[in-house]
Length: 347
Ligand code: ATP
Ligand code: MG
Ligand code: FE
Image (cartoon, rainbow, N blue to C red; front, side):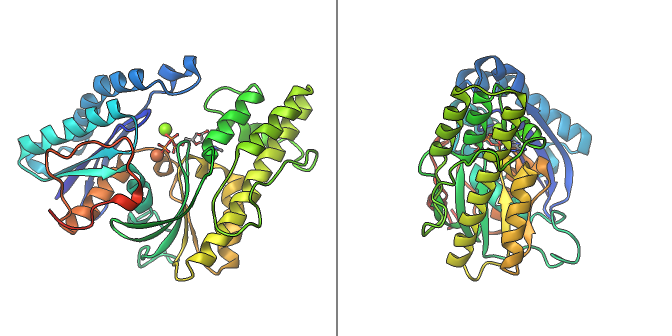
């Protein structure tokens, strides 16, 4: 009972094979970073063509590595949205073709639900703390380049969005501020490195929405503040200080929002962080402090499972397959697909 997962919603091409108990048999991720870097962002047309060129080869590679043929598959799961439509069509169509050929169910997975359910993957948790696995409901902070949301995860297909960004996603804010500081795209990791040598207290950067009710986010004011400081001219030292100040402001804001979200979901069993920005150590430790104060564990999957990957798609497929929530072969990929609109009844 092995499930194949495919991911192609943005700029990572990925395939993975998981056993139904969550054991990862093989996984592969191909970043398109170099294809898009000259343009300073993801170009949809280039992304779609790159998925088309590389996804079949990745599937062949993981199947060879695991020693599994089409007759060894129990189901095929592919990201069906949200994301860039060209890439979604490539992955979903390949997934449907394989499911059709193997005579097994197809699962069109919501990428956000992939991020949301990954922390339940056995092995993501430290033994002892999470011996019984992660139970619903839990509070998810999804912090990526395209999304910034607080979600109460109540079950498979059952997610309540408690808050979202009013403007930029947090990863986008990192990338834009990094660009202002002259750092290469995508700037998040570069900014974190620069911030390590800076003084976070030198520049007083705004902490948007801090202390306000609810758990919405806003980052555009922070980016504008960075732009204004940069415009006055900065030496090397100053750049590091701005980076440190920016990161401290984001971490403090996220911590404040997470505390509010936990108050809105008092029955949460854990605070979970996912998405590429979860790689940031300053942000992780700020959120760990919030969780500790609420007497809850902070669950942060390993970085490679925080950023886009196919293990999370296969795992969401396994969780759905267990409940009989399979999809028809005429399911259309959806560029926009909010978590609140997931299917929870079997077809
Ligand atoms: P989505 O998953 O929302 O469709 P995405 O592909 O941009 O979008 P991810 O791959 O999960 O999302 O994350 C990429 C984002 O994470 C980028 O904005 C990047 O700058 C940011 N990021 C990665 N590492 C760090 C870090 N150490 N500190 C801050 N931000 C980071
Ligand atoms: Mg990405
Ligand atoms: Fe993602």
